[in-house]
Image 1 (cartoon, rainbow, N blue to C red):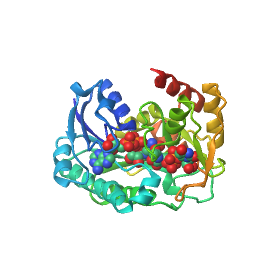
Image 2 (image 1 turned 30 degrees about the vertical axis):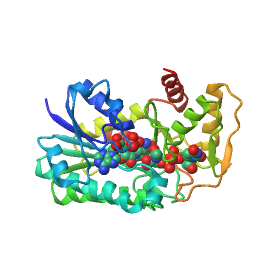
Image 3 (image 1 turned 120 degrees about the vertical axis):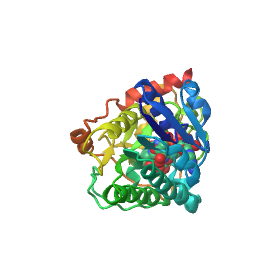
Length: 309
Ligand code: NAD
Ligand code: UD1
């Protein structure tokens, strides 16, 4: 049995990954500062994991967390574009310096591989669609810059320091446990939370901006493949469904699932917002054997069901 480290393991995506790794028989350690994550996300497995409460910004804590770890799944980050606009320095510190601390600690611990949770936000408004990995990044928020810098550090550690790294550029992830409670939360979690209470959600801009929504269990599977597939070190992979959905259509689909009559409010578009995004994930299919399995409609129904529990 090997030990794996999940940073950000008390968060939305991280907690699902922890459960899947345990189910595969891994020994799991989690490093999380509980800034947006919650211990209750790990309630079902807390007795089976080693939990370290601390920040990736603290190099000594990260060194301790990486000891005797074979694979690191690095998810800890400030994940919100608008939060990064409000707190650019803190975003750089957590997302970029935190990743560098992690890479340094992993190398010192003889870790085999680090898998970075990066983002399609690095593409910005480069007009080519769908997005492919070889496009020149055009970050348009501090969040996107911080993740792109983290990607470059991963590449340098792979090419020049001999540590295997794999970068996953998730598109917009959704599913149970995505926290709806903040203005910085993901759009699906906010819309579901509001519609469940019969309250009108707000659409920023005209609703014609697009995203590629990928279900959390598919993202978990991508991580496990990225951690274990031979000969993909140094690779960067889009993780999306290949389907382009407007925020307006998302709202209408959810309204249909809730069978309600609510009409949305409209507010000015958010600065830093990417306009259009969807993935070409054929490289992940070819080299990782990964493909999204869950459709938006099936994932939304599952999410709404879990919400009623
Ligand atoms: P989340 O906020 O639920 O998870 C982030 C976790 O990291 C939380 O548990 C939080 O407490 C922890 N964390 C934050 N700062 C930390 C620090 N300094 N030290 C230790 N832990 C810290 O968000 P999520 O949606 O689960 O995102 C997970 C990762 O996936 C992030 O790296 C995010 O940038 C990336 N990502 C998410 C999406 C998405 O649509 N949700 C898309 C692309 C990439
Ligand atoms: C999300 C992720 C980010 C990830 C990126 C990849 C979160 C909090 N952010 O950012 O980590 O890297 O996907 O693309 O998970 N919107 C509304 N009304 C709302 C909230 C949002 O109209 O109440 C709109 C936004 O203006 C945006 C779209 O919905 O156009 C998506 O917003 P959001 O869910 O915050 O995602 P991203 O900013 O794409």
